[in-house]
Amino acid sequence: MRGGASATLVRRRAAQADRGAILYVHGFADYFFQEHVAEHYTAQGYDFYAVDLRGYGRSLRDGEVPNYTTDMAVYFEEIDAAIALIREEHSRVVLMGHSTGGLTTSLWAHERRSGELIDALVLNSPWLDVTEPPLLRQVVKLLGRVAPSVKIRGGLGDAYGASIHSSRNGEWDFDVRWKPLAGFPVLAGWIRAVLVAQAKVHAGLDIQVPVLLLHSDRSMLNAREWSEDVSKADAVLDVAGMRKWGPKLGTSVRVVEVKSGMHDLFLSPEPVRAAALAEVDAFLKTA
Image 1 (cartoon, rainbow, N blue to C red):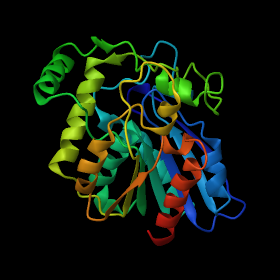
Image 2 (cartoon, one colour):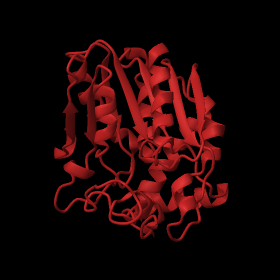
Image 3 (cartoon, one colour):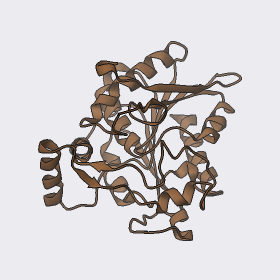
């Protein structure tokens, strides 16, 4: 990869992969650890792949700034490589993106729309907008251009992390070196890259394959600590932005609200988790 960067592709094979393959792309302060999702889809006849992007999870190298880029399109290189590898064995490929990964995969699907590289796109709480007013966005974009290494925030707060990790109030055991409960520091250059990418979504994309966008029915963005309510809402992103901008992604977009869903809907407590996966299952039968 360019600049000596590296990414990591993990795979779980189905006993009989007669329905194709799925490629999963994670979000910010994240990596792939959702083995139950892989098991769910391999049981249905999909080979399941997931990529840890450069600077994330298994791909994070000593001395690297975690999860940092100044251009979301840089990740197209590893998505291209993963899709090419998967296409050597499969004629049907579904791309799946979560949070910031949902933003990146949406832009990738738009830019690669003429290549017939994927057959469907599934978005799990994609980051399509921020809540800050336009003037502040412009200030941050300027700062990100002239001083990209300036720290905007020390992290994301640990209310969400505490709601999912098994050491606190959640069900899931993941490596907190790669996914700290409070996230990684947020740098100006990275935020600028997100805002530039979101502006492209707001202008309208032209994704040519069927898109399923799933989001919670409500957000809870100001939680300072865990509570039962944090486990029943999106505590990271504003779902209003997903509702607003989801239809702008392409020619065939289905937006589905998942009641009491967490930010990563596939980590929600049961029966919400099963309901989210069932929506994807139904979509894939017709996409």
